[in-house]
Image 1 (cartoon, one colour):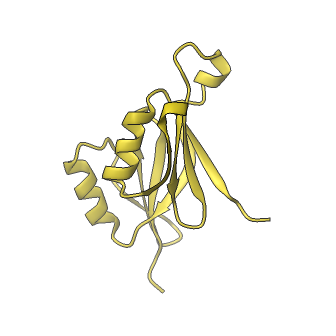
Image 2: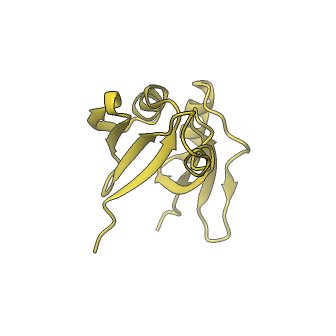
Length: 123
């Protein structure tokens, strides 16, 4: 088996589409915005952004605005951090060196979902 997709839940798919496409630079694969979703090419897997309306059940609304556990690999974390901060992307803290030799930075999408940028150590 191989992982095929990861899902992030948002109240506003249009805002998320702009964020993931324009700011993070992901290629849009499927624009189902009228049906409450869009799909991006995130490398080996698809990133699916799904709408959770304000009147959805509480258990669905709890999926919005949380740590996703998703990390995007970048080659120059410092440059990406500066570029995204200048574009208004929210980071709760500075990039941090990790004990395993890499760097991590956490950012928030427009819905408050936290994703990470990771730079692996050079080998």
